Image (cartoon, rainbow, N blue to C red):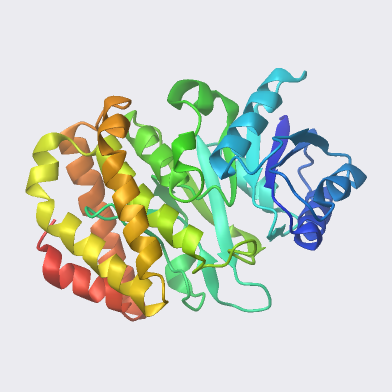
Length: 330
């Protein structure tokens, strides 16, 4: 088994050092490490070289999606060609058996349980998506427990600390670079689902994720991109009939997310993102093929069922409480 690790890098030198040290301790070793630098100014590329990584310079901050794509292309070019590709954020630290446990799943892709450093609180598991175009990282902010300790088939693996068959990128394509950062992995998951490719969530594989270590969770650029990319998801994947049928949940989701942004002082950033999303709607739609309607309906119905189930068991976030009140049945 040949694994290549791809890590997009934009500053965060000390977090990168911890991630690479944990990568060096893996019981399933990696054959190559590819650090794709998005214009770091704190010496992070030098730290990557200390750990034997091949450093590729993008020359600017081209975005997470572009950096991942460049790393995947390099991993598939170098001999021996990687059979598996691990995509890793620089602010994760892996348990020593993390990659071994994911590889043992022998699926198209796999991801594990991400905890917040120094806590037993879930940072993320797998992603779920609603009819509104909003996604939720299942369990985020909740205490770890039995609900998040069940191995299961999944549709979307966050590109935070996940393992993919290299062949999958040949079949599905690379990340959509116009997303830049945020929700590009959900877009990839929707394309996988459209073609029938599933993955595994393996809770015995554990990692720790700082989360938003570079910009911060409520940085205006983060809010703008998420607001824009939620609209891009609908443009790329929702058939026209479902866009009309789901107008109510789409509108509810957009307005509710705007309300959350306003609570964090990011109304202007949210509005800018919505405007960008609407302006790019036609071009995004023209460059993609919507998911078959009945397949998408079944997928998002199951995702909303899981969101409701987990939220109900662990306490509803205000966003999801109001979303289910306003959106109607899936």
